[in-house]
Amino acid sequence: MADFPFQLLIKNTSSDKLTESLTCTSLLRAIVNRREVYDALWNDQPVIVKTFSHKIFAKRHLKREWQGFKLLQNRGLNSPKPLFWGQAGSGRWAVVVEKICNSSVVVDVFDQTTEKAKKLELLILVCKEVAKQHNKGVLQRDLHLGNFLLTGDKVFALDPGQIRFSSRPITRKTGISQLAVLAGCLPETDTDSIAELCNQYARARDWQFEESDKLLFQKYLAWHKKRGIRRALRKSLRTSKRQLRIRADGYVTVFDRSFCRGAQPLDFIRDIDSLMGNGEILKNGNTCYVSRLSWNGSEVVVKRYNHKSFMYSLRNTLMRSRARRGWLHGHQLRMLSIPTPKPLAFIEMLKGPVVWKSYLVTEYVQAQNLYYFLHDNKTTLQQRSKVDEQIKALLDKLAKYRITHGDLKHTNILITNDGPVLTDLDGMKVHKWDWVCNIRREKDIARFTKPLGERTAIEGFRTSRSK
Image (cartoon, rainbow, N blue to C red; front, side, top):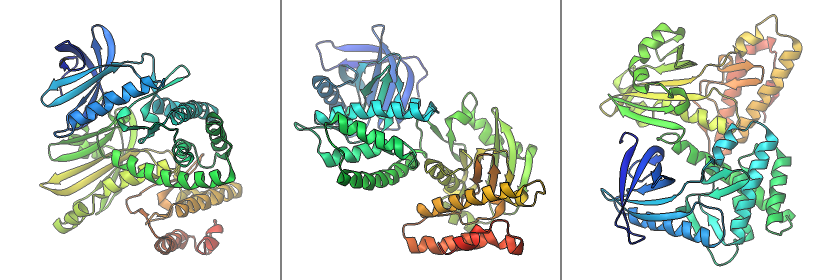
């Protein structure tokens, strides 16, 4: 990747000028061998440059993007103004649009907002803009909060290459499906906010939200939730705005950008064994080695899955490494609002094509595990009763999404002031069929209740086995 700033020459195809010179100042987004988005200056004017580099479809993608921006402008919808397009050399094509200054990507604002009322207010702004698009026959086929900019109380549409334009308003069924995508950003337990979002959309489209609409909405809400998680998990394995993927020196690594910001990720990868040895060793077994350490200002727990034999490593290569599975499972649980330590990185050490060892890095959670909580003389009956209800609710939520843990022992549940936190996820399974989930759940419950014996402090789990 070129150092910033750098000059980009574009042979202007959309006007009489031959070549335009731009100064690219930073990379905003990138998909390798597909497209890149840059912050740039053109004649001292801030602009956004999007380059397309697909070997076959680059020009087609560019034209779709350019025409999309023009059509949004023609229909009076909020979007950046298209300026010009052309060839950028090395088989690349580029489109240049105005930069909406003092703006933020909606998804970033939403994630940084902690107040429930403000999150709903932001979603309503997006919802009204989407309803306006639907009334004018505009459908975003890749609808998500990352495709909108916010400045003041105005919302601007991005990525028109994924927009379909029609001469008629979007149908009721399709509109409700897209409304469900936006509602999926809210906790499913926040029914009041979801209902308000539905009402705002219906009002913007001059509808009445009927009972049949509500049933259809709930169906789409569940479907989009599953689809959104699948997409987010795939995205968590590549370089994106939130993750950084590195392949170098016999390692394949994905970092959470917040964890490695301002540091050199390769230093962490190369020194990880010595860092673990100098940290607080939590477990030193034949299969895995766990250490708590501090790096780049973060307290973290690193779990190393050791090499045991060639066949063991080959099996974990074919089935994917345990660290990679733990990374994906951690992201999935957090997207379902099931508490688990935040995954910060996973590292695979390769010998040829075989994963020899792997490492999972998660945030450190200051808490007692359930075993010590139950055996602590300072734990009151009221505290035990509260934890009882919280863990039952946790298991019910896992069952709702057909998830089983695989090793549900007391040391894998941390007790915090905010409730139980699930750890050690590399054995977790997401099941397609209820009957398989029920069998595995029985094993989870049996594993959980076994050490309680006659002195059980969590009586509810005696009956949970029949659920």
